[in-house]
Image 1 (cartoon, rainbow, N blue to C red):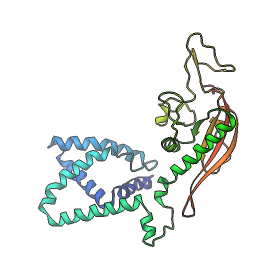
Image 2: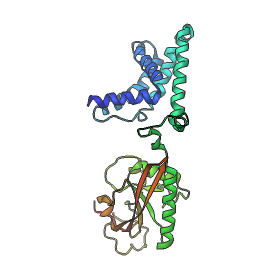
Image 3: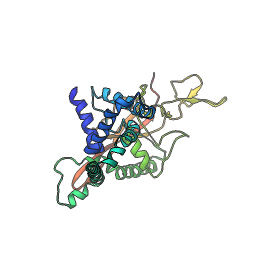
Length: 292
């Protein structure tokens, strides 16, 4: 998909500002002929090039986000400074161009972080505001926390949290006032159980894992699946499952793992009359481990 590659590069022009990214790309390409002449250039080039090329190749299928290859730009940035430094000292025109590039980059950064500046200037965003992706997380997470507290008071038991995706699980974990964890090393919010290794949550402790059963400790009543001498401390417990959108059903991995699931609320965050995010919250009763 060639258009995905163009999208990948275009997102970098927007993320790093057009002039700065152009100067950086120019410096990297122009420095290639000095790779075999100077070790510092060789080091910086190979510090960043493999990472950038890796995500460029991935973008042949679907454009990678511009922050995924951020590690590459540590080396590329130093390489660009080294390349342009003497040229800027020798040319007044280049110095003026550098000042303009930096000012454009700063302006884009300020506007991207606070698009209300555009509204204050009388410009209305007819299309979706890109900064909306950063907004509403705190309000939604606090509403979810209140919902959990109310349900726990009603049910008389503690509920653990499962989100449908890693970004929601991460943001909710960050904004929870009570970052309650089930055991040391556990995240405050889990993602649905899966045998696939898909992100950082796959490597952290999960609610579907077994822990070693101490000698002489009886097994929980009704537990069916075991791993050697292990037990799952989440068996029989209830959870809240949070998913984005307005779907009134849960995925199979949640439906099969709990005896019953029922919607208990909708969380909606609005700003300037527009819905930023909508979450559906489900009460999942009586967890049981799934067979492998």
